[in-house]
Amino acid sequence: MSVSRAEFEASWRAFDTSPAPVSGRPARLDVGGGVAEIAFEPRTGVRLGGLLELPRAVVTFSFDGVDRAAREALVARFDRAFQRGGG
Image (tube, rainbow, N blue to C red; front, side, top):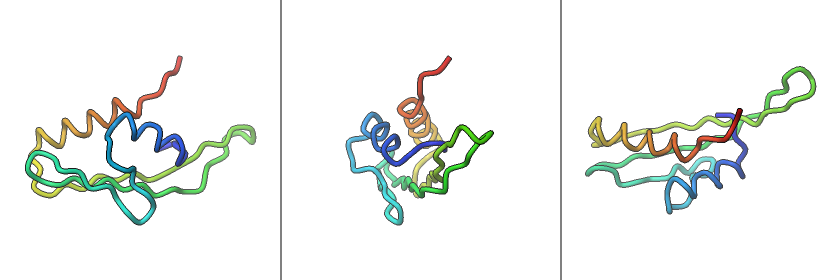
């Protein structure tokens, strides 16, 4: 994702009331009788055209005992919470 730590935390609050994941410590969420883990690992930003620098992070989802419908619902909720305005 192209997101800074501060931006991720702000969007996380729209996604869930649990503490946001930090590097090396994923968030664990109870989902549909199973567990979802969401990890956040910051990466070095990338510079485009010498003028624009974009933050980067790797965000991964792991599911244990979560059925397909519950996984899809969680990812859709995450996508909605992390959408940004644009034109």
